[in-house]
Length: 103
Image (cartoon, rainbow, N blue to C red; front, top):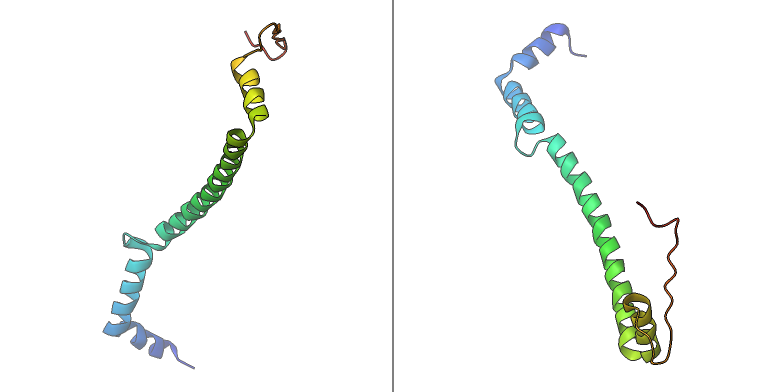
């Protein structure tokens, strides 16, 4: 076991002081300190989740696009729902939900 005087001599050693000061500098005061690395890791995780979400959305949209390009019935349904198009000699009634309308 080290005695109190042995520990004091170890702390007074210039190499130990240099190593400890370097370690403290790197961990707390450097531009890439420990806390900055932690924040960057958190941000990276959020960005990876966003990336996965957007890739799934792109896949879904491409699937819908392929269906629209290959199926005329889906094109007609899309045009009727979004652009209120109708066939000749056909009446179109638009029903608005009064609870959905906000003043």
